Structure formats: structure tokens, C-alpha cells
Length: 83
Figure (cartoon, rainbow, N blue to C red):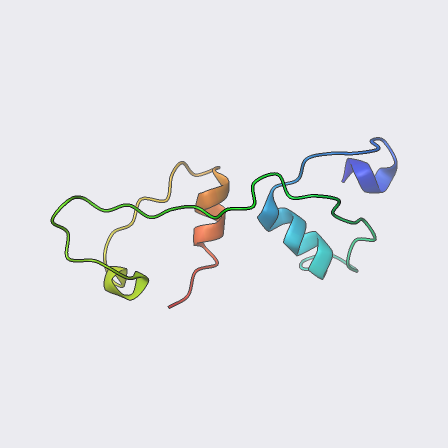
């Protein structure tokens, strides 16, 4: 990370890669960086077509779900969802 290298003083970070860095996932050790504020304190929203019988996440098990583009943050977060 550029912050860890000292190239930057402050930077925006996507939540999933930041969590992995802070927890030391796929790294030698957790990062010594810290979060100073969250920009978007809300989570993504699931929407279904009118008339769809799904009312909970459990109702979506086994169904096709469009998370977004391959590189979107929500798509990455969707890989973390377990029911």
C-alpha cells in the first residue's frame, strides 16, 4: 500500500481490502495503519422485482443474484456473504 510505503499521507480505502489489511489476511502481518473516518456508513441495499416472494436473505438462497460489475466493491463484499 502506498500509505504503508510512506508515499501518501492520507487515502481512501475500500472496506473489503482495508479489512483484509487490518486483519492481516493474505499478508505477513496486520497493517499498522488506522481508520480516521468512514465516508459511507451505510451498507448496500438489496432490491427485488415487484411481486417477488423474497423478503429475507434466506429467501435468496439458490437464486441468481446480480451483485454488480466484477470489480465493484459490492461484488467483492458479496463473496463474503454466508447464510
